[in-house]
Length: 280
Length: 258
Image 1 (cartoon, helix red, strand yellow):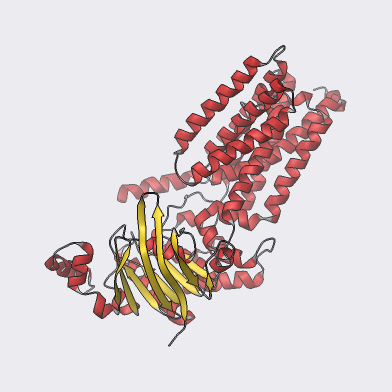
Image 2: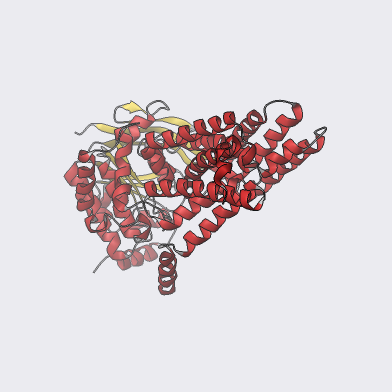
């Protein structure tokens, strides 16, 4: 294998982006998996995609559009989910379809070449600039830093939000903080991974880590590690076979999930539950 | 006479069109053990949750431990109130063990950016021993039975070192042995830690032994209030649950341990 490719800045940027994006997405994914809110994340990632396309159409920074759209989606979906007014399946169905509809509407209205829009759709880690890598690094550092600083508040909120409130933890603020971090992570990962695929990189590494441990701290480490591994292996496959990098990264994360599920020590819990239900 | 620690004045709570409390007033003295009894939908859980402000008042006032409960002081008040909710489904794969879950009770007290130290872990280990869960301290929380999970919830509350102890049907869906064990444990903790306790339960047979006072609730109102001997009569229970007196008598005999 020719390693001279590593000498090029575009490849260095891509490797760094995969590393930082993997850590940020893997860390956020732990909240998404343990708080049972994949529907919120799916809606937010598609809102980010629509917001970025709006930016491209109207001529302002697509990342700003993505971030604002994420926050708006969180501000709408969060309270609805909070009050139990919409079931997860209903809200994901309605808002997901609305966001995709808006995204394709903006794409259709966009004059001239659609290459920028397609890049946001499929992702293009190999064209990441140094400033985008720095932005990704800032978001990854903020996400990891906040998880370390407020670990016990996050842990209590993940376990049970009402219980966390009852012991005096501001669990509602923590929950909306998690949504905000999810929005920020999705926004900066949008270009390298792609609007249609970003949520898989948030969900799959955390879902794989969830299969392997009963320790929450270890789950954070494993999930971030799987995120990085997905990015690097996916990047290598993309380079070797000249195929879209967003797709190879997400497929790699899915394969890691499948392997983790196969070797999961928690599979026996399912067997144990089945056995118990036979006696009830 | 002991001083008042809870004073609820004309509390009204509504969940959209359903009124859960219709102007309830209740005063609780320090050290009292109060049993709250009533049919489903009577407002018992809501009565507990307005004390720690998890339930939202439409009108009225709640005075707890020397302060009216407001948005600004609710977090600090909650740190002094132990609350055991009804048994909840815990994900069997949840990556937390029993000791970590009991430690959650101390997180509010510790405050932001402070980590639990040796002293906090010692308190957690002591309360786990008190509730008889030391041998399961390292087990994943989702692998416990319902009775064991309720013991951990009680340990979590005690780790909080509360002044008030609120329990919402802690024995629901447990077997008879687990029910009696949990009620005995609550009484033991109430006495040894000099707590003020409010217990929502359907375990009528255990109440006369455990409680100083019984509050009967129906349709969002306090329907009866007094000593267990005075309040828990067959006539009262017949009207409270809308069932004939002979049926009440028969059911009470069935539920009395021989």
